[in-house]
Length: 434
Image (cartoon, rainbow, N blue to C red; front, side, top):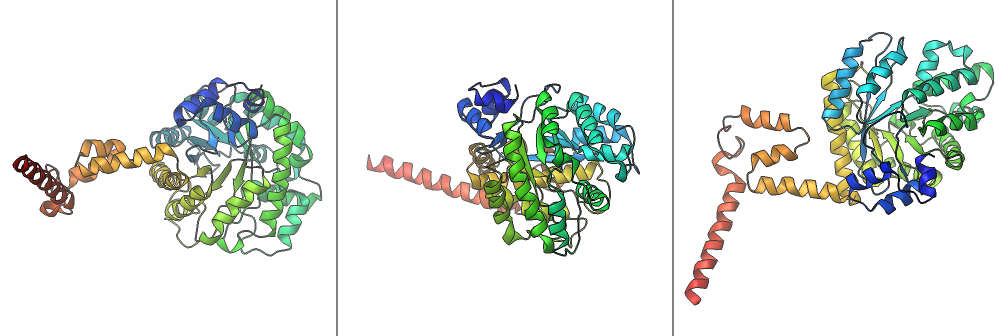
């Protein structure tokens, strides 16, 4: 049985128990939310790692995209990106490799991956076949191959239908279709006149996923790639289809999450989250960023973190990182680190608003260490302990209990001294009055 089928039967699986323990929640509460589809636990039966949950009442999770391209294909480099992403706190990694030897690359990553692993099967289909050769059997064969290999969740652009593409084309966009999977499917649909095979054969797709307990991540192939295109007819037409497919997948025993837009102005982010939750029956929401403006190439980890914090606070469950390399090139090791940290900051900021208990405990402990000028404690609480320690030790105050910004005028030292003076005076006055 899959996680959702077990939960519906009242069974608390090992994976549900692990999620409950890590999140500090009663196992029965987690089971009930898995049963309703509001929590998913992407955990392929062939991938051995400690389970991680995504969804309601849980801390916001972070994904890091890695993967070789047909222009740059070094397996060792992708493995190092995996290690970097996990070291800096990613809960999930997606292998988005294109080109050749994709099964080998994915196998190398899976064998070393201690977190959730996701893929986008159409990348492999398109690497092995020309666009005009796309058929249902090509998709089903690749999905089966990746599921048997151990992939925990797959992005499948099932909502890119003929009708949704027609609605998008009827409402002219600035930047058209920016999803690789969405662009491939839309081009195939418009050239052949046929319906999306992932949509037409959705039940067969779910049958394969159910066999291995692979979570389906219903992809947003028509997502906006410019803030000026956000929340338009094409995006919403696809979302309505995804709402219908969510019900079908759950009924077939498959866990479902929904992918959301990548470029969204600040004032539309909360509305997008509410729309997804309403249309898709509370399914966990997985967004790229979202990026809040389009003019910061080289700094899009910042635009993504701004949007991610708002999205998380509004109820988004899963943030896909954006690196400084977004829109420019394949990310390197440093880009991966910066993208993960920026997105974790966004997720944590949202969790403080959502009332995630573990987030507040962590946050408050850092403040207590700062108040006591406990530097080792501060390093332990930092998202990037190495950088925090290096900055302090590189300063001229490295041997001091204060930092080089305030020095002898350290506000914490001044306030601590004032508190001690007040306490001593109160003790002395109490002794005199005794």
